[in-house]
Length: 478
View 1 (cartoon, rainbow, N blue to C red):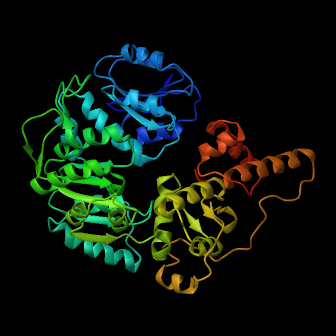
View 2 (view 1 turned 135 degrees about the horizontal axis):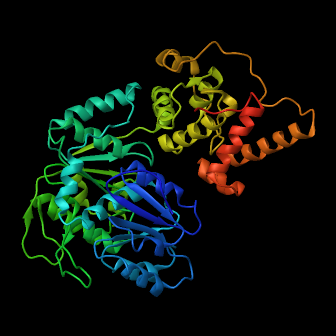
View 3 (view 1 turned 180 degrees about the vertical axis):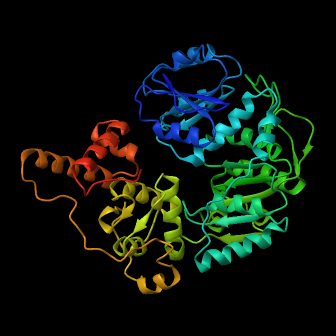
């Protein structure tokens, strides 16, 4: 068992197949908590100051044994259980247990886990308002880039909307930055300093959505040993962001409509309405009017949440943002001296980016692994989908994007990553390089590449360092 960082709030991760859940540990640390990791959940039972335990229920394992282990923890400990999404009976059973959140075993996205950390951390505190007040005082830094003319126009609209109280609906493809835009709107408004509470309507079992939205009173259902605040109560005076609102169950939409009309919430099991001041920002990657025609989305709710609609452009439609985003993402991943060759720039601007900024992030992480001291060339860029766009005029992009901004030098002559092997040891290194390259090309993250290779991420980093030392063509940013 080891601790990966230091923080006030402690989250434990139990996973016998470590490092399978390494992405969750990274999200725990990125969210400002301390991650405690072990292969067995039993090793945490005597851990003091523990707030949340994340564990995995293996297919075919005993559900009753898992429940017995959870009972050995204190009443103030919350649980996030990773389970097979196809096992509906197990998910339903676990979801009924107070203080337990069930997540698809294959889902490692921030949109899923960040609300769990925050909501369950609130539930684990004796005074739920304490965490809301503490997070309200923290200034969130938006990382949306507004360089391309389309993005600058979007920012101008956001600034105008920030001065109003209008409900905003953000429409755009997955990974295009809708939540970051919502935070930008919040930070530019007079609600800055108040809570920003996000809820992904598609990231949790249907049975829990209503509880997360409206909260519940103590004793509202079997096992409800404490009262719980919903997102509207947590966001008092601030902003509520409902992501993927098109996925909300139809039976909850009528209740949400009433809350938005009256600004009043009745907790589950409660009798008295509570009045709250909040601003709603919703987001979707679907056409809600199609949902209206298919009777999966209420028309009256649509008009309530879409007083002002903003279309968030895909990354391919705002090419002027690509280089600034690359610089920002490289810095985020520890590469402070990034340099793009003209070939790399041409590759980035020729791609159609179906995964938007999230895919760009993956591409840059892979490029950094093989970059020569921060110098990224076309050979270092590997896409998930190799299709490229033929309608890009790079000269027009270059006019809008300064080469100085991307730190582009005079394009040097390309050099091969490896010279032809002259001895057995060089041939082994070259073969190992080819295998690693193949794993990097076919995966999204370094952790996935390590799993495909059958080694740990630490071993992969070690091998990369050894290859860098033995060949001048292979290195990464320090």
